[in-house]
Length: 326
Figure 1 (cartoon, rainbow, N blue to C red):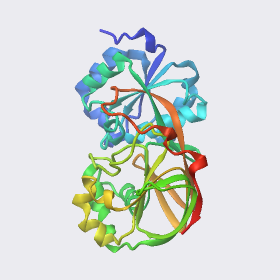
Figure 2: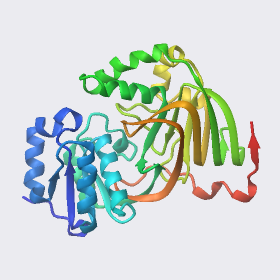
Figure 3: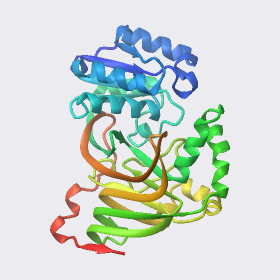
Figure 4: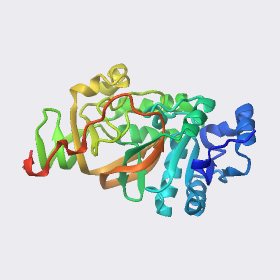
């Protein structure tokens, strides 16, 4: 029996067989069922991140729908391929969760079960959602600082999944906040005060810049984030590594963040001596300066309809803003 949804055709499923420690090869029954449903529409990357990007860039011009089969890393690579093909705004984008973290799908209530995820795709309901853009990448969630350094440490050893993060996370105990220069544009702070531009000098352990609410493993890292409000959601963790570790239960459930320095902004620039960066669970690299901006309503995501109303993007009006330096 084949998957039939003519309004989504032509479509392709993008699979990285090496993602999540080879989950595509290990879940034999699910793999077989997906192969029976989609047949030649399944496109297998050669296993590297760049091969996934290149595959999507090559085939995207002929497609109406692209479905990422994997977790946050595969999603990031497929989105990058769509950007490089110039098709990010045009194609419909679906997800069949097959990863280890699966944080992106959680923000949109896409079921973890592949059978239920297929029902969502077949229903074909689409939401226009925002993404974070930086350099040549797009993402749903990003961190700069300690958690990105932990992500880099994890990829340097062979322990996969959750326990790999726990092992790498030991280094948090030795980390201290670093001096950063922060510049926000079209921003509002936690007290509701608006700024056309705001410059700050902070000592920061970690910063989360996101459109979605979760890191991997249901970590509720950004409880105030909204997926289509037209703003970056930004939280600064101004604390030591040991303080962060002691606060982990509260951070995991999103409670600590409600008491931290928080902004909504359309654009953010960070400057520091050496800034580690991760996006969608993938380590990006180190920078002395990095700029993030929101790309509003740029992705046509196939997902269940939202259960709550989102903040309207015109809540902050430029003529009401002022420029300030602190």
